[in-house]
Length: 399
Image: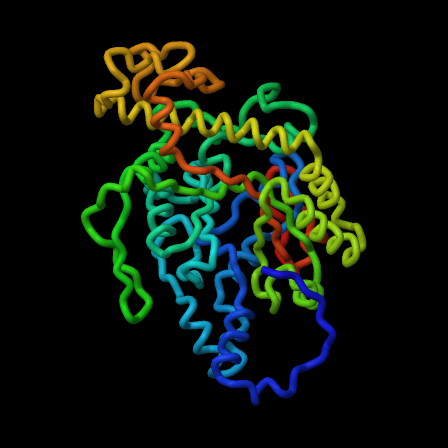
């Protein structure tokens, strides 16, 4: 969404414009949103010294219809032509509905397998990521997930010059990443091969077609992956006048492609010019995001994540006896994966390296998703840095 500065002036001749022109202007005012479908458990600013932010309030605000829906009947009509309230019954989220704009929004899932260990009651989660990616595709939105779903990205440790191997992993969070039985990555692999048909009914409900149909092998899938996040605690007026969170300030969650230093710098300038500096963690994060080290680490993560996806795709196609794997499927990897590396057996902490000269690897490279690393910038009006946060738990109070 383009960013702008307001002058406080109004265009009094707007009602006299032809209806076709007015409708185009109303549509231009709609936000391009990151439609979060579930709650934020981790703000993604580093696990050891996180930025204090009650992110759930931003998620709830972001799930509402755009401000344009409340302007007048004409604007409301355009709003409901471009989007609808998507009702969901997912057991891991308190969001019962999310406003979704097909072909305009990014649809984002905050889920990781660690949610299963944090929720008070067990919920089925084995196909959470797989179902989400299929829903996002059926709704004609860009799918987005957390980087940790595929392979852990230790932001704080990497920023401090470590790679995550110098400390013990977070209990319950990292024990499944390097298993061939990682349900989340296997779900991504299934999504690569099959897709849903969707039926959009008049009342905005979506019914999923059954059965699944095979995907065209030449179709390339793109997945946004969020590496890190930062919350800017500013006022509603500042957010709206900046134009950086939608023209009307109703897109409080934004994504910046890693490497887009110009856009990242504009958000940093907004923070510096409109805060007292009390939220010191924010500057640390902006400095980290702009560093060459961060860029290299993201690229390293992408290489590792692609290897993890290839590994699970190899496991699947090995079971299907893919012809390119031949009599020695393990030869697609360096070192050669032996028969002991069966489903659910833990492999090395660092994924094996695919043999780029192997026929199957050349073939598989064309089908794995295009992972696009991003940074999330959240706009919060709560002044959360004034809340007392416990070292290893939730805040002592909410705004």
